[in-house]
Image (cartoon, rainbow, N blue to C red; front, top):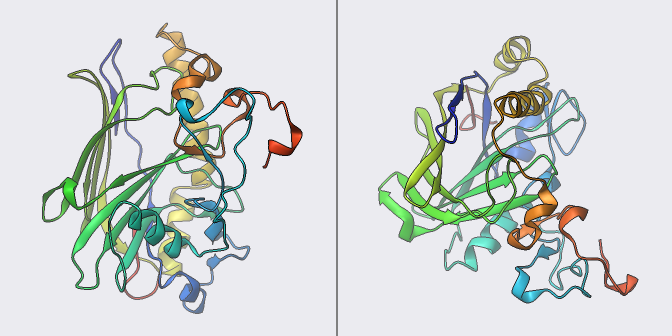
Length: 295
């Protein structure tokens, strides 16, 4: 469910499905599934490099960038770490120790090679099985990514992480980049329950919710979901543009991505529209038994 409250109302509800993958089990899922593969082509294919690219250059905040720097250089510590290792390293910088713990990723893999996830969620557990952190990885239609970390200090309840933070990220032309995201992420159990609100000051201007029951991940289930939700990743990107067109018809004010370039930072894979020109070319770089699907 997605509902905009201001400056004009706009609401829609669609049924989708998501994968909930234990990152320790992804590589072995091909033994039980014919329609899903890891790092290989298939109807549904999970590629480690599609997520959390912390081994790539981070586009820095404006006070750490001059016009002559252009695109950031490759991260000096870049290495071919696996996705779980990247999650652990990223959260370790926030003071979260995931040694011996597990990470579950709620997302969509590639469908017939095509990938688009507006947001993916990582739920992280310590060695005792206690949920200690979460990550929300937001991706826009320019394929930029920005992770938002919710550490132990954001736990409101034993199973819920809550954080309000300025996004400083271009998600929609109909929403300023400096509004606040308010994340409310409940650790998945029998159901998924996730809510993200936008706030301008104390005014809630938009809400998005993902809810649904847990289902077992089997070839039969994937075949049924493929018929029920065909080309789901392509459908998602298509619906985003369709509703953007409807907002434009409603004459809701909008702005181009380049118009707020200085306010977009802390992201990966920056689009050329926000990267200052480089004066020096050398400065330019760049489901097993316990794994389920969410409906």
